[in-house]
Length: 431
Image (cartoon, rainbow, N blue to C red; front, side):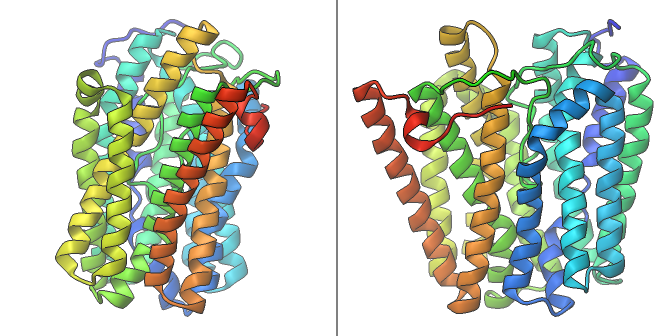
């Protein structure tokens, strides 16, 4: 199949519609409070929230094969259906810990499958044109942030009716996305005709979709085992640590801090968290211009500094205004993490590997992100239970800085000795 690249074509409109509707996360801003309402403690909530990221890491190697054999359209339908089933199960039986864990596993598996199929579908609707694919994904990135923003605020006010309404609304949105994906599938290439898609700056999930915090894996990755170059490891580590700590705190620490310590209402919580998505929406519109003007490294350094400052602000003050500003700064930083990493990895792949970023790199860093995200949530939950959320946030700040410092030292050492960086840190990936 060769699809026209015009944004007015039916396949492109359906793809854009799918991306926007699939990011209507009505439940995300209030999920932590919902679980508190059902008398789950900090440790139980941490386990439930971490189950999502852990599932993404486990299903990563499987989703690529599924997309290759069954096609992107069918994969999107199944993925969104699993998300809908998970949210519906959470709404019906989430007051039981085992049911809540199962619901998150279904939700995470569905997201993992859908986000794997997303870049394959994008490439198919533009007839395999890589440049047009990147432009399409980048142009829809800000719309996805906006979708998360609007649905998050709406979910906070829907909570006034019942704590189950945001979950049911999220399930309905996922079901609608599955319907759009079914229509889109009629216009996509058959399985095997477009089995892979190179990563682009716009191919990941939105920063506002924090509970899931995760980006995309690329279907059709190579099966060979290879070693990361030191510069690749540097940028993979930057991506994994920054997104893992940022979204882990966004999902597992900050809702508790704002709701229990700052004592905002549920609707206030949704509005403060919306500052993250709003800033990410703005950043996504201008990040490409920033990359062109300043390059990847200044943008990456800026996101690290901003995230450390935000963690410190949340830990050291209970001011609502300061918390809102810190949340907005985190959102702005989130808009630059993936574009900066992908831009640099793309340049390295072009200069040293003679092509697009290997799928093993993308798949490996997304699985590592899921593990990091789950670890931040779990350790944060333990610290909240044993001490308080301030301790958890300070520990998050110190651990994030320490991890970057150790990683930088290992990378410099491996580069100087000729030992491959991933041989030092076990970072080689297989697909």
